[in-house]
Length: 57
Image 1: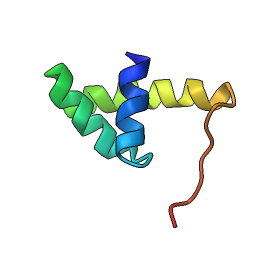
Image 2 (image 1 turned 30 degrees about the vertical axis):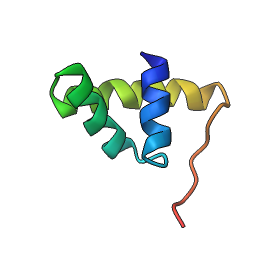
Image 3 (image 1 turned 180 degrees about the horizontal axis):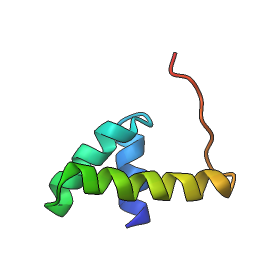
Image 4 (image 1 turned 135 degrees about the vertical axis):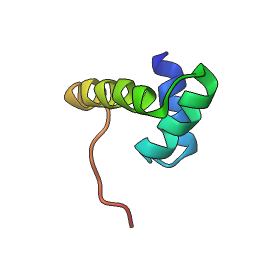
């Protein structure tokens, strides 16, 4: 699941909303549910120091 989230984020240049839409379609679930799962995962990865917030150019 984490790998799918990482790939979706990379495909959408870190846009969590767009990544959640992609994952929702793949998982056949509500986009809000996919977004909630993705937000939790991103927080965990950020806390581990693997990603950081950066403003979009």
